[in-house]
Image (tube, rainbow, N blue to C red; front, side, top):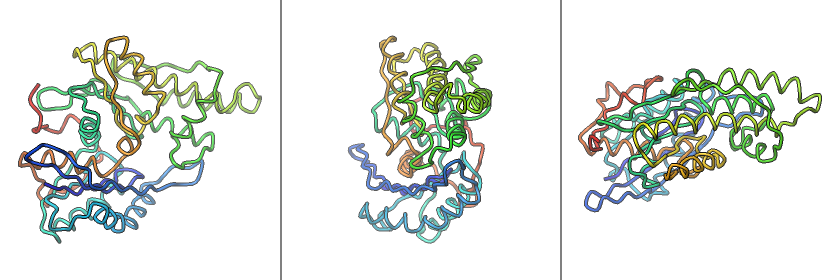
Length: 342
């Protein structure tokens, strides 16, 4: 059984083609093609411009994926697209294409929760069984555990996502957006050697990043020009503080459910320092950390194809008249029929 997945919830346009062997259970990744909307240093990406990027490139990227996978339209069983969460205009641009292809090719369509796509792809690639999931990206920050056919949110950000905090600080420093602002902050942080104390905002199982961003912006304006610190020192200090908060809340969730596994998913999950800090915590608890590389951490179409196909095999489809988008589509709203209850 083969699925075509379309992802475009933010600035990454991803098309993936995946095959599930119904007899052996083996999963084969046939194509995972991506095209990124990159803006000039010091700027973010706007919904309108990002949607224009997706509309411009989506047909060539789909053709590229089909060629890479060496599959024909007749071989595809279902078309899966990101229903949400995400930015409205980019989501709609991709959903329109998914809906059009489903009608033109006479295929079933499945709307996929973006967060579920990250989790299920992470579980498939790493082999993690029943982990506490730390989902960290530009738009989401959640600590998640599975129970009774749903991915339950144990804790989350109360304001902006951790990736958004990093991206916005990269703009303050005028760092490039290529390949991504978070990656460039990570490289700067490796060269930092002075830790600057920042607010540490953990509230129970939840975290808050907006105050930290405001504080470090003030520090940057006051201390960079006077030579009291360097951009590298600030990146180092910001990473250490944000990631310590995430490790704390993840450890608390591990203790609550008795898990020995942590799975890190989402674009920020590529950060090696975050993986290192989480691994140190997990090792102290006799546990293990699972993470993927940039092929699967960063938004991609293959995770949408995979999660959509898991749902499709249970008999789930999205009626064409309901193949819309939901910008605020929470992880725990999805009924996970393809997993056992516990």
